Image (cartoon, rainbow, N blue to C red; front, side):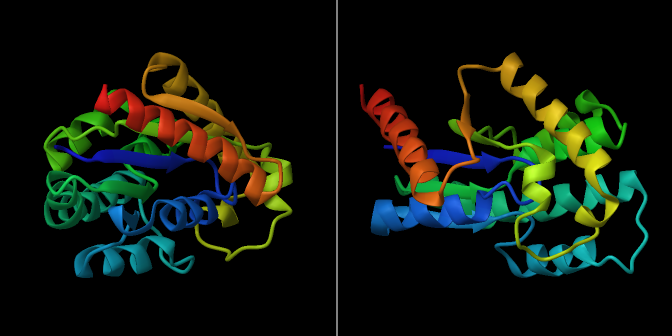
Length: 203
C-alpha cells in the first residue's frame, strides 16, 4: 500500500521544522522526515547556496535551484519511501516555490508549477499543513537568519497571502493550523489532521 505524503508550509519561523520533528517522533519508525532544500548530497549543497546571504541570485535561478534539489529528493528518497508504505513528512515542498518564487517574486505561479511538475514527475502531497502565523509574531521568534528572512516583513506578507490563495484553491489537500500557540498545542492539531488523513486513506 502506498504511504502518506505530508508536507508543512508557512512563512519563515512559523514552526515548520519543530512540528515536522514532533510528528515524526509521534509516528515512530513508520515516518521518514525530510527537509527542503536538502535530504540528498546535491540538495544539501544547493541549500547552502540558497541560504547564503552573501550570494545574489535572480528569482529564475532561485526557482530552478529549488526544483533541482526537489527532483533529487523525490527520486532518491520520497518516492521509494512512499512505495514502502511509509509516512513521508517534509519540511516544505513544491508549494514553497509557488508561494515564494511564483507569487512573492513575481515569476508566476503557473510557470513555477510547470517547472516543478517536471522536477517531481507530478508528485503532489496527500496532506499539506499550513502553519498560519502573523509575520510580525514570527519575526520575534528565535531562529537562524538567512537570505530570505533578511529581506524583511514585506516578503513574508506576500508569501503568507500566496499561501492563503493556494490553500483556498485546493481545500481537499490543505489544512490551516493556528501556529501561534505552544508547540505541543500546535502538534495536537497536526496529529489530529494526519490521523484523519490516514483513516481516509485506509477507508
